[in-house]
Amino acid sequence: MHPRGGALPRVAVFGLGNTLLGDDAVGPRVVDSLEAEGAFPEHVTVQDLGTPGLDLTPYLLDIDAVLFVDAVRMGAAPGTVRVLAREELLEIPLSPRVSPHDPGVQQALQVVELQRGQPLDAAVLGVEPVDMTLGAPLSPAVAAAIPTLKRTALEWVQARLSQSDLPSPEEPHETSR
Image 1: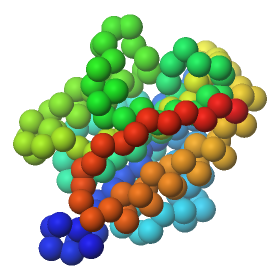
Image 2: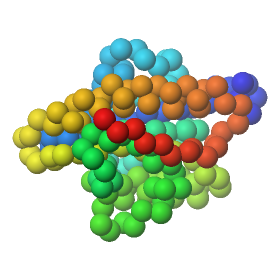
Image 3: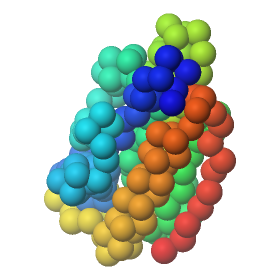
């Protein structure tokens, strides 16, 4: 049950990344796999958004919670998986960039939250990349992290679907592969 009179929370999982840039393809690969497997209920939006930048805002307007899946430079060992909570995302300086998409993510969150008048339950499910050069395949470390990324995305969404009140703070956690 959700505070909006029993309606289910509107949850989205968006893959971010360029499929031509090695490990940057991990976001689209994970969400495409989850969608093909029918991993989420029909009312959960699962979509590869590519590299939206500031065009991300419209996707966030009518949802309660969003998880972005992306390659994120965190200074960790290659293939390390970590959930970055909304608060952490908003604290990351816009330069240097952590991910090719994070200025768009940060700015879109800020715009949506100004319009809503309250924070959006948002997080990035990131994996430490190895190689994001044009034409490179997924690195073995990032490819090996895909099952962990999928499992973590499923757990994150399930937690939101079972909550009685959105948004709530997300506790960051790390998993090293």
